[in-house]
Amino acid sequence: MNLKNILKDATGEISNISSEVKELSQVHAQLLKVEAKECTDFIKLKVIAGVTLALIAFFLVCVLLTAGISALGIFLKDFMPKGLQPYSWHLIASGVSLLFLILIMICFSLLKKKPQESFFSHTKKELQNDKIWLQNLSKQKRKSS
Image (cartoon, rainbow, N blue to C red):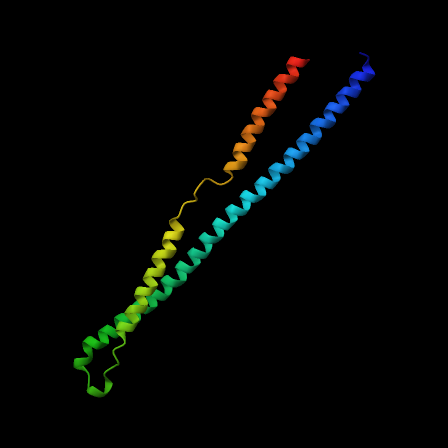
């Protein structure tokens, strides 16, 4: 073999390898994009549940304070003149408080929820497979030289 043929073969081999690497990179980019979307969707759910939890907890405190004041008013109504006795609406406020408490528990359970599998597991697996493939390719190249 002369130098010209060796360079021609090497150039063709480099061209093949670079196109394979480019294709492999595109596949990895697509996989990374899909897994990143799954990750962001999970984080969005956590943020929405956290904000909802904070708002509902705030309203629960407001309703519980209102219910407590109302209950105190009912308890003290015997000590007030008949014309000043408040309407007994503490049961309604307590019902709303119970609804808020149920919503808080739902949001809290969503915040505690762990992902079903670790994020980017497919990408990690593919990168490990590529590492093995490249090692094998390198061994084959050394044997053929």
